[in-house]
Image 1 (cartoon, rainbow, N blue to C red):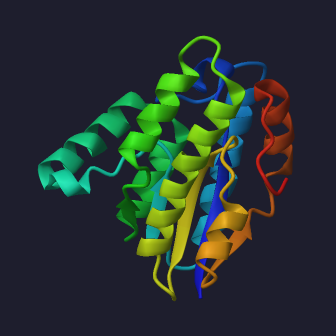
Image 2: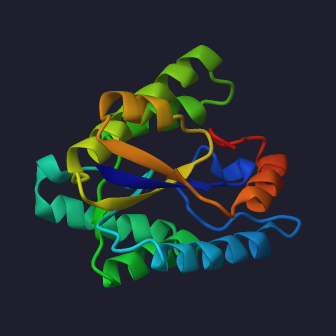
Length: 197
């Protein structure tokens, strides 16, 4: 059975509708985020070999060829420069994990356009997020092998736990044992509580 370690990530309200992955700012949250990622790194070192790493907002342009996907990778890291998640992804890659394109571009851009439209219809926005989540689920389920362990860094607004295990029963989801304080304080700041917390 494949294992997927679900890592909730929070963004400030101004970051919720843009692609930037800069660290959450505000009353003590940057320090809290740094501590969270330090603990996460230690936890992942003890979790055995990580084969795959996924991150929402990393778009899958593989159908358009290797060069396009390389440009997307460069863009992803440039736009999120300085975010603790970047260092974690690069560290996991250095230790042998493969960074997998995670999101369907059409679903991502449909959601982003709606979310940034000023006052989007909540049911349309919810539907658009649902289709983003389906794309993420499909890519994780299609690429995570039966004896592999993957890490999914995912924003708190996403709901993928039940749909993923329903569609791909060969994947078990692992909840982090140490993130309660980060989740609580980040949820207070952003207004989002990730599923399962």
